[in-house]
Image (cartoon, each protein chain N blue to C red):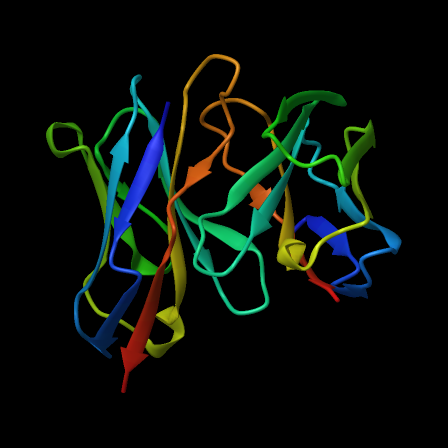
Length: 113
Length: 116
């Protein structure tokens, strides 16, 4: 149990589908993050929310749409994805200060067909 | 801007041998540095971190890392490798203050294999 729970663990979707990834943390953290992990590339920071406010959007295509209704929940809404979007999507949370480590979920393995 | 370079995408050692995973960073401000480990089909788990104070940092599972400002390095070591150490290891840097504080920038990772 990592304290950060992501669902689903695996997702296969067609390019015309709409789906959502869910992340929930029970650590009392204020900041939540979406990272994308692709083979042979560094983890890419996608979005950051601090106290429910989006503080970073790292030039992510609009087919990825985040939502943070409260400090414990984070969603990533997906629509009209491309095959190159296939990756492991990791959610993380932290206290949001420079020295506070990130706590990661186990990720959602997304395959776009 | 900050960045991290991990030398060697794959390192192989024998069980009982020294583990050395290299990390160099670039940062315009004094950085906070982290090492994470990722086992197959799992998320990343914190091994250790350096923020301020003692430059030799001890972490979980017998790992340690030393912050060397003059070399802009934060290499990860373990005196004696165990089969269970086989995993992928990530070095990360964050800014201690400012709008991006807390946002970790990761290296590409080093996959560690341990031979019996």
